[in-house]
Length: 312
Image (cartoon, rainbow, N blue to C red; front, side, top):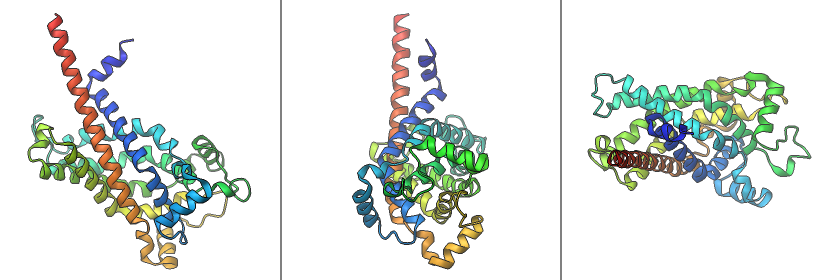
């Protein structure tokens, strides 16, 4: 009965809850743009993001933009809590000379982000695989032409595991790790640099404004996507193919080579505008919600401690 108060009283508990709020805010704010990005990356005949939006809404309805959201939403609390907690531990581990009262150096921040991205890939690969399969499914073809028609995330995961085994669930793991390791280093480094630039001293005081959190988080998201975007295009194409039909690509290098040969180097940047717009919205929301929730939880815990001491 006392588990929840004790859990929230710990640093891990606060990180977990704050990370969950941040992740949920990011998913809800940016999911429609993510659906448009995935469709742009997957096909060579999709056109602009606006044309895709119009066609999706006309054929499948506006809710199609949120198809597959249950998979990342269901895992986002744990995933984001672990990401922020792992980052906090690793950034300190790579900068052991820094005092506990001071923030880690920018070197520690970048290396901690790289390690966090690599570890996160273990959790993220199955979630993104399921999400991509659902996002690329078109309602009007589900029952008529499509062999792999899914009712939801559980149906997708069950079908993949049954037909492709555990290896199928982790399809795209290598490319996900290659994408997320450097991008997370850039992500956290950019956020820490920008928040300090906008609000000098806030890395130590933790008193930056909402605008600082929103803009610094948005810029961090944009920077991380720009540096890894070609890898994300390859990842989407690899995870979109199913073993139940003839695989189009044999691996990362083959996918890269065939995509460039057929569609030119521009294919590696297709959908970047949509991804950048989404990244700014999503990561601004994530950091704002995370920092706000963490600040509230720490202040609330401190108030409760004061009241308890006065009562004694």
